[in-house]
Image (cartoon, rainbow, N blue to C red; front, side, top):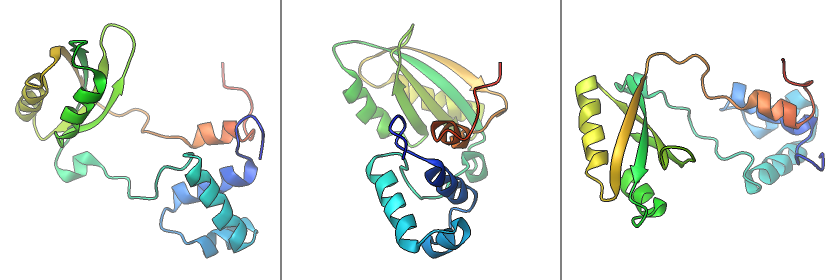
Length: 166
């Protein structure tokens, strides 16, 4: 393992394989990577315990579930309420997929989904009804250009890629 990133080329190949085929077993991983089963298991355990790999669950597409409308909502919060309180409140709204504390004009950035634009308004209204929200600014996503990805970053961290393109 490299000292700077904590992952090496074998870790990157393992992550790449699991991302391409999430249902593959440890034994098949070891066969394809040409290493012992115990090595694969130890690498997976170490990557998971360090938080590099956060899960092995399915990657669910909200649009396929009937929620094709996606929006990013920036929230300005009353500072006395706090971010943790807001995160708990937002966590009770199923359409809020994620929320991040941010710098800049707003305090939190949320990714939310809905079935229709009218339903999106209803979700935003529920967010606004949360104690402590002063203002919300919403941007509706039109099309996904680059899906969420981490493999290029994993490869760079493992030293497998060159410098980023200019």
